[in-house]
Amino acid sequence: MITEPQPTPADISSFQRTAPLDAAGAAIKTFMGQSDPLSFTKGSSIPRNEAALKDERLPQTEMRASETESALQSALDALDSLPEKTWEQRLKDVECTKEKATQIIDAILTKGFYEETYKLTSKVSVTFKTRSFDHQEKVQQIIERDSPQFMGTVSLIMTKYNLAASLSKLGNTQFEVNEDGGYPKAFAFISKLPYMLYNVLIQKLSKFDRLVLSVMDEGALENF
Image 1 (cartoon, rainbow, N blue to C red):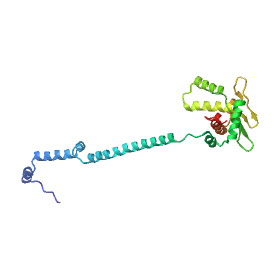
Image 2: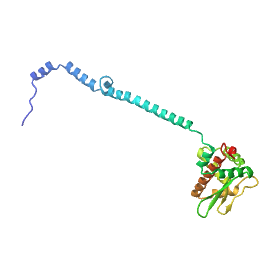
Image 3: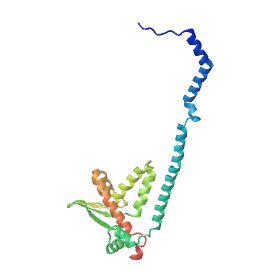
Image 4: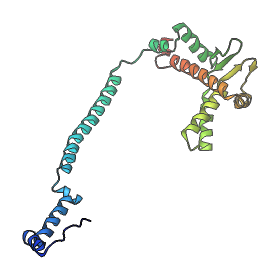
């Protein structure tokens, strides 16, 4: 059996002579000081590298923000510098000829409204008519009365009432405005429509409104 040699007094004294206790403690303290994470703030090169990287990143970030702001401002300036479209150009955007625009203006000035029919299918069509100013006041009063909390609710109210007020005929069903300027039949009818059909009607109404607004836009009467 092999046994490890036991230290002799000479060995111990030799160690004590070469590495006194104070010197060993100082060495340990020095080592611990170098290993202390807090000491990296002064002695290590890692924080300096991170700081250097931050110093390099900050100008780049600021530069990107500056470039983005500059690009946005340039885009806004470009929009402002675009020449304003003429009445004829606005008609072209909604695929309306001057002859048709004249008919629309004539109908609004003489009858007080204009109607147009759009096909939904090969057999079913919908006819819209322009809304009166009384309707606009009515919708505004309803919104103020109900005080909806969300813009989506406001949009839904306006869209539903606009469709009811504009609906003149759908398929074989005719809708009329009553003596009080209301449209209970149309409102009750669209309230029961399938969601997809309601969306299709809203899209058609939006096309109709864009047409009329473009025709009656600034400069329309001068060209009438």
